[in-house]
Image 1 (spheres, rainbow, N blue to C red):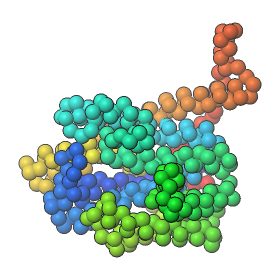
Image 2: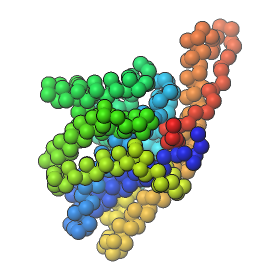
Image 3: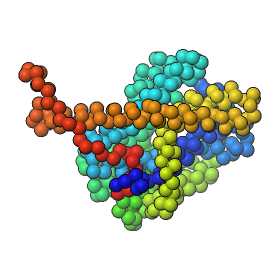
Image 4: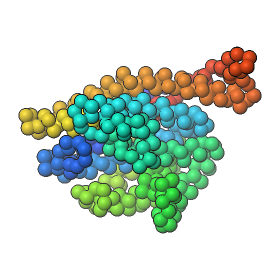
Length: 379
């Protein structure tokens, strides 16, 4: 497997999903919350499109189902856990501390020290606490997905087990909603599970070829996604039109089907790898960087110039975070966690990693390098 085999079409879709969220917050969001957010009236014509940018999150979740199944294939729960921790935490910690710095200097946002500490754990959603940045809520949803995939990894990731897992999750989600069980709804996420299941089915289609069973999973997931997408327009996203959302969700599925069936392999420009790398830090930091900047740049600058400046600075901050924090942080953490996992395996195998009585130390070397989730290589 080489870097030429990277799924650069996924890199592009990730970046477009992140930019959808960015323009939603900058030009399509009805201002509210702790940030000095612009209103839809600032960009009325553009807002007719950007008000649907929040659907980038829906695309993120479908991509996650595709990529995470690729990442966990052939791995146990330990390796999967390491891949998730090293992928998420360095940039996330930096984003939380950025919120603390902005709050300390400008008194903007929710970077109060009382919130920063629990936010560093990424468990604040389960504690009923606010996020330092509102966009962090999606990471809590992702964490639920990772727990379920960790269970699948412990059982064994095979084609058959994946199909059973996807069927149980799909039906269990609907049953949880029908029963009104808060516990089951929390664990099975009925409003979002359809995207993850669709992504998993599409990865199986990509890896092993399409068949009627996989098309059935994609079709049922699409029906559920349209249902929940329209349902959200009457609640969280009141400026959106349900019919437009249904069409947009359908288009997201069509694009991912094109990926799964190899129709987008021509998108193989190397620069897309860079865009994919910028996606996560851009998503984490754009609210804290761009919203205050846009508010203070306008009306000193023309609103379009102010919008371009806010996006450009957000991209620059994301690139700096990727090069200076995320890449070195991931490398360091991956090596340390693999050494820890090797030590656990040594103990389980009957060895002694640390014999305090004998004052000896025997630490096995880390496993050889494996492709990370970010490599997105073709099987």
